Image (cartoon, rainbow, N blue to C red; front, side, top):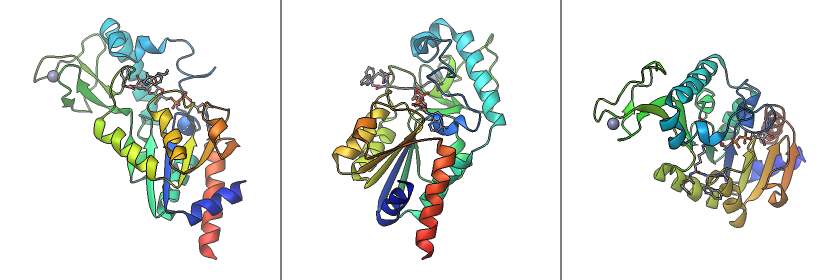
Length: 246
Ligand code: BJW
Ligand code: ZN
């Protein structure tokens, strides 16, 4: 099956990759859902919503500080690096990521749409002003926005919030044009991200899913590969490179 996918990738003009937390799992970044997920012990709406932040600001900032510390210690894994290599081998390539850890940028993938923001940035809860990312947040003494006095929050898209209009529009445009669409390491339950593989498929793309489990999009996938992205993706890329070398 991997050979077939490498062949499809070699022969197509537009590849789109959608990634989720599973792609960073092998770097040591916990996923959200499932037994090992960061939400096994929390209710998502208590930590990842504006209401949750306003009601539990200190707890929410402690959670983000913990994740920021962790993310300073982790590195891209073989899956991130293979995606960068896939971009180099492709004519047109877009990476759409739900991940906020910035590991795809560190791995030097170029054309990235970050759907859910970036954990290293801060912004004002009221006026959305982006605030210096290097400030260290003391959860007991949250800094306020210099412009309007609002609380400083992480620049992450929480539940119930709109995604950046330019970014999500571009993600839809590229998904519609995709000839080959990879959905990798995402549980495919969070919208609108989860609707992108469906859009791609409806517009004629071949849909490939790489995951450790089945997801709501598995029934419409042309190929489902059970396995770790850090193990599967390098094999696919190596096969594409072999084809190009012929
Ligand atoms: C491996 C692996 C390995 C492990 N290799 N695989 C339409 C229908 C239904 C609901 C909605 C809808 N439209 C909007 C909604 C509401 C909501 C939503 O989708 N809710 C669903 C949960 C039901 N969506 C929103 O609110 C969005 N906003 C929006 O639509 O605005 C318009 C609107 C507003 C108001 C009302 C209605 C519409 C915003 C969503 C923002 C999500 N933000 C988060 C932030 C978390 C906080 C933070 O990071 O600090 O983004 S939620 C969280 O989930 C995070 C992730 O990016 C996102 C997706 O998770 P992901 O990446 O899929 O991770 P997991 O853990 O779920 O899965 C990991 C997978 O990897 C698993 O499958 C493993 O098997 C696999 N895996 N290791 C390969 N090595
Ligand atoms: Zn402000």
